[in-house]
Length: 120
Image 1 (tube, rainbow, N blue to C red):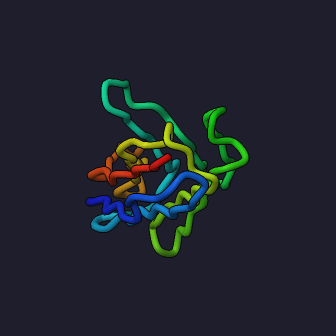
Image 2 (image 1 turned 120 degrees about the horizontal axis):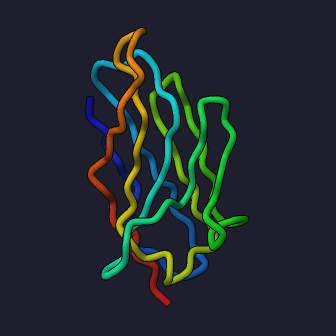
């Protein structure tokens, strides 16, 4: 299984970006999905998550600005980021709990990371 993240880039403050993360390989189903970020010198933190039933959870600083969504037909998770701030600058990582076989409990897979840079 591989996760391929895309959509990062350089944007001015107040701008928007949409991140995508697509899973490929031996996939029976996908449970939870999430986006994390890691800024220089800081620990990786959860930004947003979405359950199989599409319940969502957001880190406080992004509430009202970011929206996580999923397309199970495409094995893809998205992160729409609006009203971006310089403090959102980080490498963004996606992860998914992927179930490989009908009897599997699933395991966590990570994408390779995509850089988001917000200028002031």
